[in-house]
Length: 108
Image (cartoon, rainbow, N blue to C red; front, side, top):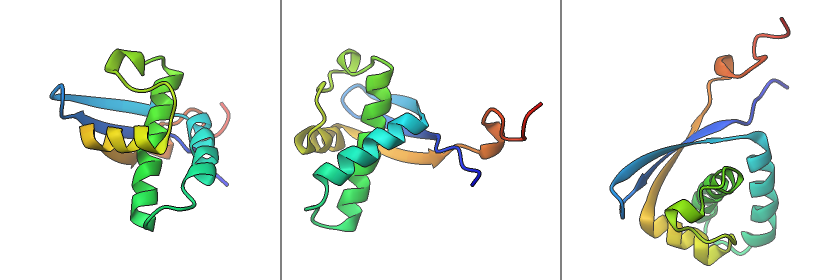
């Protein structure tokens, strides 16, 4: 399998009127998946669950980078925290082009 599991999350903060671009790493995806398994089993719909996953992966990437306090986000990820993010931010998760990842073309 050749897949980097690295994404760029484009976010717009409606409170601050600012764009943000957050690079997520495979560890963020792993933590988001574990959180989703524990918290999204009762989601109203698949669309809602997927949207919450998008916010959650952005949250984990921002936590890893120490950004949560800077933008006023909770340091605990709960469904309420995710939904509050959805009231404040738009998100779009983009695949990172595999060709731009380190070692994508093999070893040197």
